[in-house]
Length: 168
Ligand code: K2U
Ligand code: ZN
Image 1: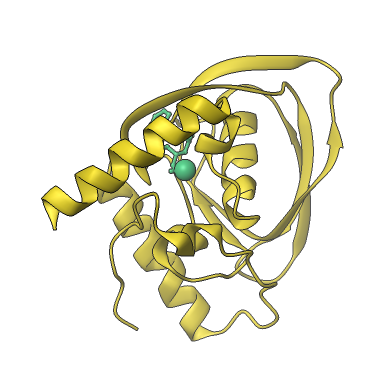
Image 2 (image 1 turned 180 degrees about the horizontal axis):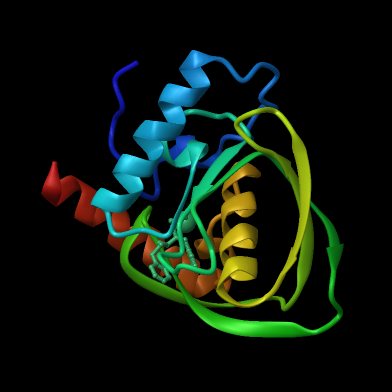
């Protein structure tokens, strides 16, 4: 399978809702490898399969710190959320040079399958919590643009659509 690049907003394929991964086969393992390579090449710390036009429930994460080894999340789900919220400026590989203030729950417990198909659960906060929530948004077709006011979202859409025309 040839890997295309990261889809750039307002590409409609970013709105795809991911399908569950039913079988973790060689094709899925090859996709995971390609997603890590692309994520590193684009200086990302997370990447969702929908961003590479593969509507599968699959995320790769590498926060680039020793306490958090690289993660593969297959069929991830958030199972618990804290009441407390945190605001952060989020970037997105599908929105080059765009940063949006997003309010997210501070702590989450999530479950997912690893590449061996084993289910695991993890509680987290900080950057990993924000990243997992950001990536699971991608799997649901939700983007950082959706956290903007309708006016700002409209302006961003116009700007990025124009940019796409000039680049192509
Ligand atoms: O999904 C993506 O587009 C990759 C995201 C993941 C992410 C977004 C917000 C907050 C944390 C992670 C980023 O573009 S990766 C770029 C980046 C690098 C260092 C710190 C934060 C974001
Ligand atoms: Zn993103």
